[in-house]
Amino acid sequence: MNEDFGSVPGMEKPKGPEEEVREAKDFNALYSILDNLKMVRGSQKEYTAERLKEKIDELRGFFKALPKNEDNSGYLDGPLLTGITSTHGLRKKVRELLGKEMSK
Image 1 (cartoon, rainbow, N blue to C red):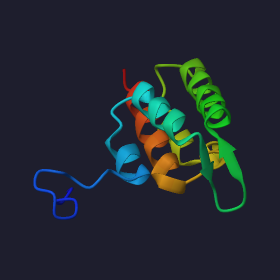
Image 2 (tube, one colour):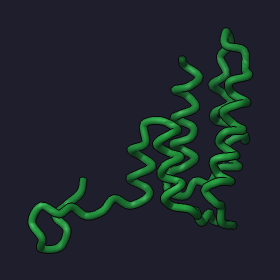
Image 3 (tube, rainbow, N blue to C red):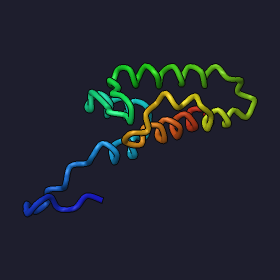
């Protein structure tokens, strides 16, 4: 939860990237956050917002192409998501949002 920012009454501390990602309700909100960040530093390399969005879109396309009448949730825990950095909780959020899309 945000607390008062400094000694200015009513001003809240700005949200950090991890909190913003955690609060994203859909991919549009997540893409907006990535656009604002412009660059995300992973454990081994940096990712541009555009590249991350491309990788996410590739995953979304893959999951949309899966048969709807089968349980495909195992893919969410497999190696497919390792191309998405876990920095700021991105991989976890992408997994969550993909799960929501699969259940539609």
